Image (cartoon, rainbow, N blue to C red; front, side, top):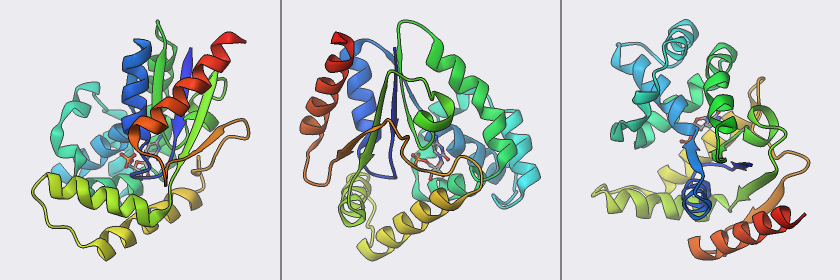
Length: 208
Ligand code: C5P
């Protein structure tokens, strides 16, 4: 079974994906880390994320070990990731790895922006997680504060909106819900409530 979870930054899709995979004993892949790793490889080599050739070359050299790097989680890398992820050759180079991961037994949960639409259009369960941008900015601020940073709410909100817009308007694999995705709005839900709703969905599909 493949479970596709798509959603914007700080919607709660990562936490949900991890909990769901642990609950089902499935493997979990946070696909944002692939684009973050490519962006970091470009930056580490002294390049710019806007350099499409450098980004494509880094994606072709992608090494799965890169995604374990804790330095990928910063907002700076997240923004650079949303630039390199708009390059068609970057997306193309990362498809195989994601599809193989999705197909490997006993089952997989993948979260990202195009899992239900491009990577695993046949996924048995598709969940599209949303939340109001202001709530997502509050979550991101709490997360950054937890890491000892002092974020400014307005700057975090602006960054989230910019990233949403860039992801939704790119030519290849634009960020949108699959027609057959179940919508899960987490604006008013905590992580446990979102998890319970997702488990109910999966059980419904399994019973069929
Ligand atoms: O989810 P996360 O914030 O880690 O993703 C970073 C960036 O990677 C996103 O803003 C998006 O541009 C890109 N991404 C993507 N497709 C995915 C996952 C992430 O384009 N499946």
